[in-house]
Length: 433
Image (tube, rainbow, N blue to C red; front, top):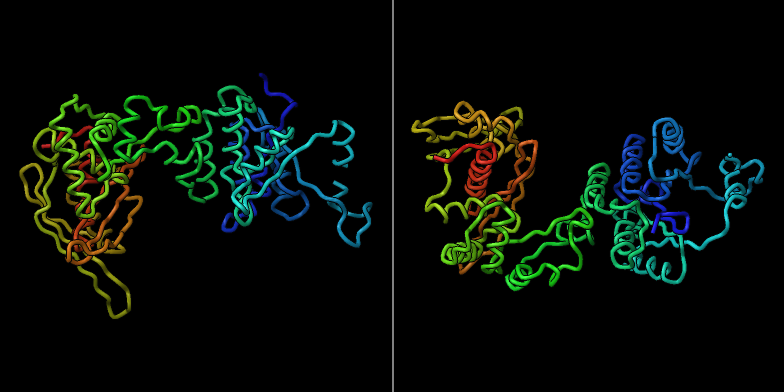
């Protein structure tokens, strides 16, 4: 079934979606999002309300010159005259007679435009289509005022995958995950992990029973093939994990356990024991992979050993805060003393460790700590509270996450950072000692 004028997918991200609290789009942002929407293959892109504010007026002027659309038709929002102003004198109504032109050039159709105040925007949109509506409006990722608009990504996926109604150019739906997350980067509004179809958790499996079923047939616990929207299946490793979870997760990471039941059993037991102490591996794939390698070869992959560390935080007389770290590390048979400073003890520790190791491992130059999370866990078995640290690191081509747990936040951070650099060196092709 070819995409035709018989059915309209109408995106209003740049107008209605931009009214979301905390979402502030520049003209450059709107141009970038429009290009992404066109790549997705929507039929219409509503750019805003020309004349309503200087930004929208500038956007339409630039869009006319700069946007070259392959799939979409660019449209504007309009209204009747304002109160106490004659229609002939209303600036917005007077913009190129658009309502008259549209009514003259096309036959009437029924459309639907839903908001999500009761959590029913997508369901109501689907019901409207079932009742005969042939024009559906929504926003990418459900952006919008209050609780947002109908999520157009979900609606499109439902229509194409569940109702077998082709509403985008052929195979365009496979770009949905990429485009959804690309637009989220432009808006600087984090994507919901639980967003249908394109959330990172949309095809994530945690329970051991689920993993066992997935191993037999993914369709037993997945309503669609993740690849249909450009997403991917993910196995989460936790204390709920069974043998199937560990085996599938290892395959996902590119590690072949060879069906070794004893090895897989050891990994399962190790994961459960460590998670009982506060570790989490579902959000720390890199630390899990290092654990797997340790069980496979009998020792932890290592490029260096941290022998001693000291961090200090000092407030000087001019009220400035100075944080320093001193570390002694052994690498390639030599002991190295290194120091670093930073905006906090963890940043100083990270800088000191890299400074000391870069002469031996220049690959560390491209590594960057991109995120750092701390969670204080409840006391366990009568002991005091412990701290869990999650670190995200990037080499410019990808990111990985590592975890550390200890009563002391700096010690927990040191564990996570050691894993992060070790895994980073392995990604760069270095062989552990």
